[in-house]
Every structure is written in C-alpha cells, then in structure tokens.
Image (cartoon, rainbow, N blue to C red):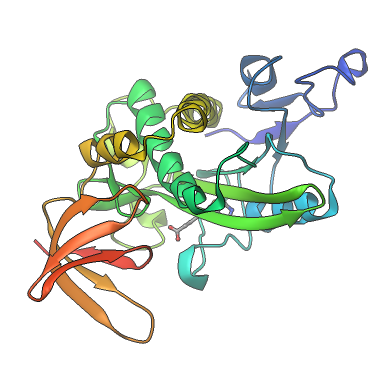
Length: 287
Ligand SMILES: O=C(O)CCCC[C@@H]1SC[C@@H]2NC(=O)N[C@@H]21
C-alpha cells in the first residue's frame, strides 16, 4: 500500500453542499469526487498520513462543533488506535486503514442507535465483497472475520455535540499486513487472504466501505423494521448457530448456542437454563 497524501481543497468549491474541505487522495485515488456529492451522506473526508486515533480526533472535533454529521476522517497509521473494551488497535504504518465516521441519525430513537456498529459491520462485509475475493463474515457484535481470523474491528462511540447526540463509528481494516506484522496470531489481512490477487488500494477499500455504509444507513433511517436488518445480519453472520462463550464484565461468562439476533441487535444465546440476550460482551466461537 502506498502512502496517504493530503492536499488542500480547490477554493472554488468552498461553501457548496457536499463540499470536501480537503481534496483527499490515497494512492492517487480521489475519494472526494467519488463520495462527497450533493445529497450524499458524506459531507467531508479528511485524510491524515498519521494520527493518534481517528475516533479520538473526530470525537473531539464533534464535541467542539468543528465536525458535523457526515464528516469522515481516514488515516494510514494510528499511534494510539482504540479498540473495544479499552484495548489497543495497532498496525505498522501504511498497512491498514483507519476510518472514522460521524453520524447523527435523523429522528431515530436513541435505543435504535445500538444498530449503528452492526450496520458498519454489514457495510464492511458488503464493501469488501465488491472489491476482493474474500468471504468476510460477522462475529457478533461487529468483528469482521474470514474463517476464524479477524480482518476488521469496529468501535462505535457516542458523542455529545453542540447540536445533540451523535456517534463516531470507527472501522479498522487490515489491508496489507504481512504474516510477521499481525498484532495477534488470530488476525489476518486482505493481502494474506488473497495472495494471488492484487491487494486493493486503501482508496478502494475506503470508497467501498463508505459507499456500502451510505446505502445501508439510508435504508435503516427509512425503514424501522429492524427484523429485516437482523435477518441481513444473520445471513452474513459467523456466530449464529455456533457454540459460543460470551465474556461479561466482572469475570463472568456464559456458554450456549448462538441462536438469533433480536430486533435490538442483541445476541440471543440458548443456555442450559434457557435463552439469554446480550447487548454487549466479548464472544468466543467454541466449535
Ligand atoms: O476490534 C476492536 O477492538 C475495535 C477496533 C476499532 C479500530 C478503529 S480504527 C479507526 C477507529 N479509530 C480508533 O482509534 N479505533 C477505531
């Protein structure tokens, strides 16, 4: 993967609907013209060669009012990438892509917002399927796996902005990591998964994921039938039907068979004592 470059905007485009504050290019690709257009979800895309954490940066900008919904921040390297449950998310420079999106669903009750991170997982699966030959699936809640190896992690964080609540959805995708660069042995990358195919550029990966997210998010805003999203999720799930262990806070864990995703996006597990629903937790696929 080549480096990420940043250029300043064409001043003649300033002030327009869908104006991209920075004309962004990764690997020579032009994200702005593809994705930031009048009427689209995306209002600005900024690309940083490196940063601490794109989620932290975008959340800070949202809190101060400097970033509005539809803002996207992309980086090729994070020195303090955040993972779920306080973990770190790291990859060597230029081998992965970090994408953070700021969204504030219109007129959607906040209890439905738990779907946002699951929708992001769906968008990654759909987007990647369009550009590379990998069978990506979702490990509940929103890890993207190929086989049992993790290709992408997602961290959604709620943020209070001067205009109300919003959500930063962070997506980290392992693009070009070699076997000796994996942060953990259970990770993988697009390059490792399809060694005989050209590894998609960061530009293609970002464009594919943002394009898929925009479609899925628009459908979800329009359609409050979360059973349909649960069905779409199950169709791409690596978890449903598996024997799982769900780690809860306080060293507690529950085992059983993952049976369903309910309309709140919770995982329903059949345990020895009956069905239980989980809205959070770390899942291990046992067999
Ligand atoms: O699997 C996980 O633990 C979630 C990882 C989320 C990583 C992404 S990379 C873009 C965004 N910025 C961050 O600091 N974290 C998320």
